[in-house]
Image (tube, rainbow, N blue to C red):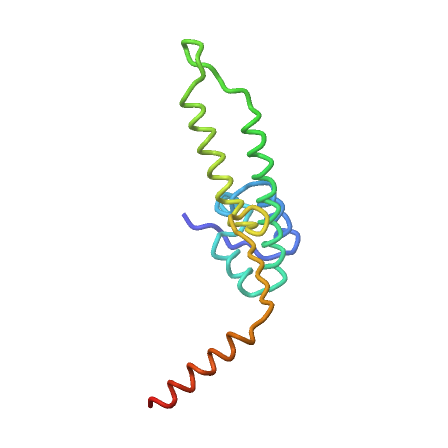
Length: 144
């Protein structure tokens, strides 16, 4: 069954962004009958740079939320199995939740949560390289 068209309003878009920042997926939000369908939201984002910026900020806030959730998952008490030992299934489920949130956060806010390495290089003297390169280029020209 097709949803009725929901007309754009800034108030509605603010509500969508708030839900995203609080961890809901856009897909889940758009399943609500009072919300627009995914196609409508994508059109709004593609046609309005300010909305795109607002949406991007909501996604960055969502990354921060996921980082907080990772801490909560890590700090949660691990349940015991029927034999009184740590439940390996629960540990694996927690690991999966953490890995998923880490991956998503690294994509939503790569400068803070991504795996990147900052490389700093300083070149002090290029005169030897420049003269050598000039000689090589002139030899190539002479061989033509």
